[in-house]
Length: 90
Image (spheres, rainbow, N blue to C red):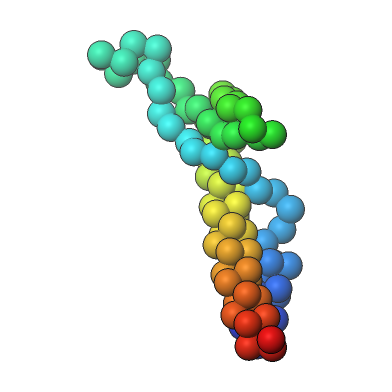
């Protein structure tokens, strides 16, 4: 029960900016690695999406992805603990 309370507190600290997906470096000329740009790929409402990420937004996008990964890990742990708690109560 104490761990669930801690998870809730950590979730409150995450903030609102989160993005799922993976960030990859793409090239217009892959053989010579020329014309590089960043691409964000993710799934939303069961559809694959890809977005171009401007260089000035790269750091913020990485932070948003890290926030989402932490959110997913915390909520997964919360569900695990909740299931254990329910089993103990029954």
